[in-house]
Length: 132
View 1 (tube, helix red, strand yellow):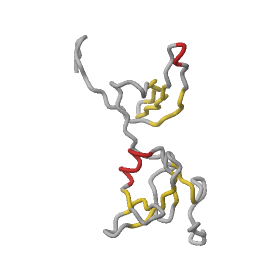
View 2: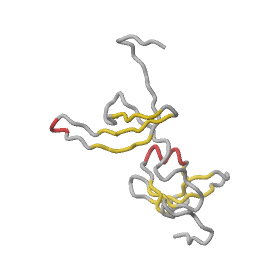
View 3: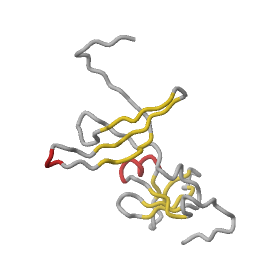
């Protein structure tokens, strides 16, 4: 495939945030994400400026992996969410008032999401006590 200078294109890259670099706006710097992109041929690290209007970032999956029943997660505002099945039998987040929210919606609107219980490093056990 060939491209010409001056063409307007859209590039979508899927990767893992390796680091967040804080820039000093008084010295012309801006925060950047260092995005690790890998495939079977190797990998590269891309510097992504998340504050630019021309850069769109969509959250796909949290650091702790995909939510599972009986886990407790915290959103970017500090609110706690329990992972449970909703009235239609679909896995969803539930707040303290019994309101359900789809994972994708919460991840997009209030991320980043962090697994609180069980700690992300622990393997779940049938003997785990649930904190509610």
